[in-house]
Image (tube, rainbow, N blue to C red):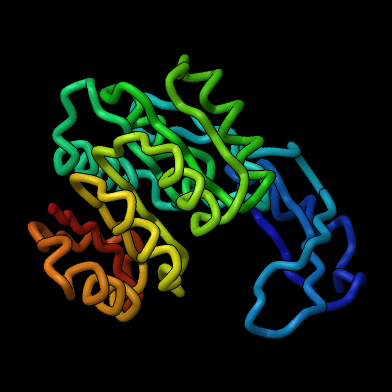
Length: 243
């Protein structure tokens, strides 16, 4: 899937360019235009226009298949994503009796992996299109113990705390800006036995880990870098913390 991000409606080239693109690169199955008129710090605008090919992309991580729309987050390096997800399972060490929360769950790639080995999983995601994709992905992969919610992690954590339900594992995979202090406070208040933090930004990861461990609420157990973005300076990290 290719998304051309433009500031104006005019794409700058005609349909022949799109035809040549698909002819030259047959692995391209979907092309969109996104119009982003907002601040430079905001990458994607709200308006998506299909230009060529299928409305959605289908991909797989390990044994699971996923439907992905242009608005939804999905790891583009699926080979390394499989390694990442398997490492999540290793760190989680699930027995089948656990309740798990997966915040910033996107299209539920990690949630679905975990749901196969947990008793119950809750997925939280602010992007509505990602939740729509996630529900389809649950159905297509035969997952029935995963409940998905649209909303901010901070707001959902308050509801979770009031319910009094025990949370054994909390998975957090935020965007580059990391977690807000409100979200981190909420995680500590619900007292999950274990936290798995997945980060694409070492700077905000270090900041958030400092917060989670400052009062000895959690202790850092394992850190593993995973090269999701070869030939760049970027690195993904997976971290395990325990009470």
